[in-house]
Image 1: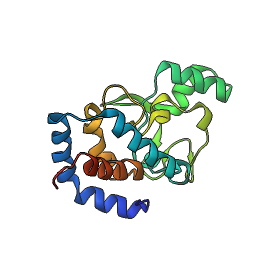
Image 2: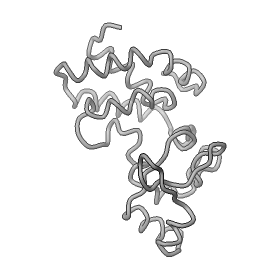
Image 3: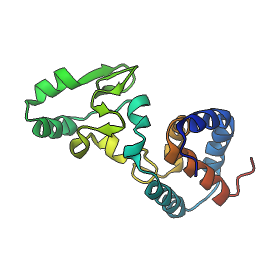
Image 4: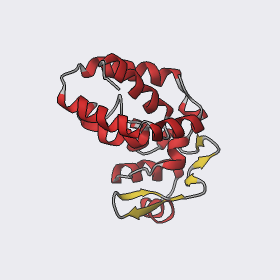
Length: 168
């Protein structure tokens, strides 16, 4: 199990083409999503996301109206203030949590989320291997990039390749 973030970035980039081929392979071959979910769950149990926080440093978090309401209750402020102070509009994704290139998510302190109990649904389901809409194969387009910064995704993809007997 590789958890070093520098190694994850280097290996994820090095295996980008292989992961793209694997994504195509998954789409064109039958496999048991249940088995892949079990593998992903096992890997998620072994890695403590709160000791990493790299997703919060690198990725954006889409915010829904429901998320805004939850954050407003948690922060004890009006929803309009949550929108104004803690979110921004991203051209590609819509409303997301405010972030900076240097520090990442506005709610990240070190490797910990300061609103963990009230974090947006997108954050709760991250990295979207076990929890997410559709099959794992249908979400694979996201995983090639995530394998470059998330230890869970990187290790899960490597385990999936072994399970599905993917020829590298």
